[in-house]
Length: 318
Ligand code: SF4
Image (spheres, rainbow, N blue to C red):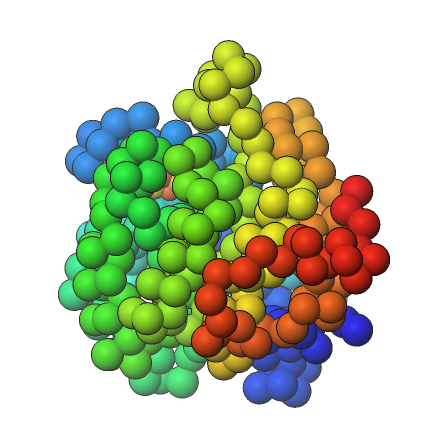
């Protein structure tokens, strides 16, 4: 069984709605981050090194050139422009308007995905995004929450709490915007029960999309120091699969999974090693879901450990 038969994946969702493949092209808007420049905090989130997931040189290229270059690397005829790096709503609204419209006016762009923090989405930005949606563009507000546990949010120096996420999510969705929430599994301080509580709270607030990924310990982050000193352990493949599967099973079937795992490359990636291979977690998640139930199958269930069930069914973790 393929993953998209068990999970409502973004790729399939786009294919269904557009009748063809729609590819997401990542962009660097040259934005900064209020959790680094002292506006909200200094030092940033302890897991973060933006260079580990974004092309820092791209910030010196125009939006048009970035889109042209990215589009030449993939095979599709329609695209979503994804402002990914740093906090892509962190600027005067007029500057945002110029950036976003530079992307939207390119041929074959069907919409925008805008990645940001929940405490950095003022009403004028929501109104701007809604105006694009009203013109027929597909608009996703991608909010980094990471976990619903306020103590963990404090520990990783996020600079916002769950209530802040809840406020902006409810407001954005009431205006008709789609919200995709980013969650990290394996943050220090979070237990498997916290992963379940997080997905339950996110679903209860209301959400349209979810991006799930394991904690990557990357060079240049605050966590890298703790990991080198032996104060921090990376999540194992088994534990990630177990939590991801349960989170997916507790997610209503109409919520779209933009991602169920993520990979990273050495030497930037320090741990866990298994994150170098993008297929490992995805394959295991697919196999586990096939054995124990697809997305949405456990919404009413109480907390049950999946791994013993899997192992009894012949599942063998690497
Ligand atoms: S994860 Fe996002 S909010 Fe946190 S420091 Fe990095 S860019 Fe800023």
